[in-house]
Length: 360
Image 1 (tube, one colour):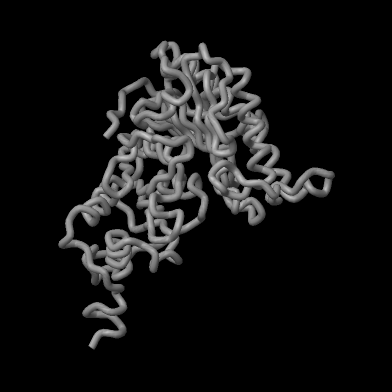
Image 2 (cartoon, one colour):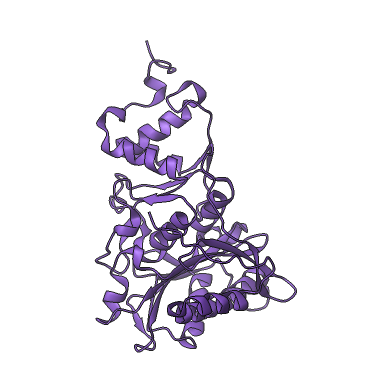
């Protein structure tokens, strides 16, 4: 697990630029990363403003934010108008910052910006775009790596432990920025009057106990035995092996799920399954799983693919996918045990077990 460094606690209400300046003064190696965070934050303020217009964009002659473009990104996912607009906003902001290389879900290859710069940035510009039309929380995820002397590929094809900073912005009833610079996790809120991110809470910690899990239960029949058994055990409630009743949540927006887990604890599961194209998971390692994993560990939680810790995985492709399980450390460790201890795994639904509806 990533060690959480100790640092002075900034005061609530501190503007993000002052916070970043203080962090860079204390740790000069973070100065360029802090500049990249500031540029990203500026882009997300513009994205937040655009999202707030909702369907009004199409009424004023623009493309509907959730409209399909007829194109697909490099990994085959359908692109929405807002996906492309968010990508362009982030890229434009980073061109004005000292960033060497830019990797994005919406780009076919790594882009070279200023190769002499000391940091490189990977981004999912618009996470959860299937929720645009229904006004459910969506977001932006980012990861900042030190630029590698060997160039673009080496700057991103490395262990997630190498990240200098990571964060996400969630566009919901209010716009929040959750950020780590490698010394804990802090929460900023976008002030609607000043349009500036202000520190709202320092030292976020994922609650150690919770009675919630997040997974798309419609895929139950496709799951491999360890995941199915864990979920079945949770569904048995207080009378089952987990000994308590659980609630299930599923938003289909990684940032929304992450934000809830930071607030209330629990565990998120997007496992590999038997469907074609899902055998190695679905979330992208570099710009989705790795930054979320760093945030989770910095907040006292855990993140795994079921067997391997996410932050030790080394990608070999830009858009490489991975299973992702993260949240309260106890729950993440428990799910990992289902993958390595055959005695815990059963391959039958609770409906057919001793207390099931169809047992004889």
